[in-house]
Image (cartoon, helix red, strand yellow):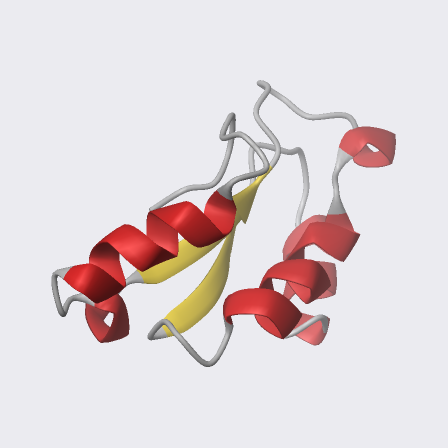
Length: 81
C-alpha cells in the first residue's frame, strides 16, 4: 500500500490490517505524490519515520518514487526501503 496522499493517520491503516490478521502480508511504500517529483520535494525522512513507527508490524517498508534518474532510488535503499 502506498502512503502517498494519505493523512497522518497511518497507524490506523495498519491497525485495520492487523485487526483482519493481514498486517504481516502488508508492504507499505513511502511515496511523495507528483509526476515527476523534484528532488527537493522527496520526503526521505518519511522512510525512517515509517520504519520506526510501523516497521515491526508489517512485512516490509518500501519506496515508491516518481522522480527522474536513479540517485533517489539508491538513497531510498540506503535508508532501508
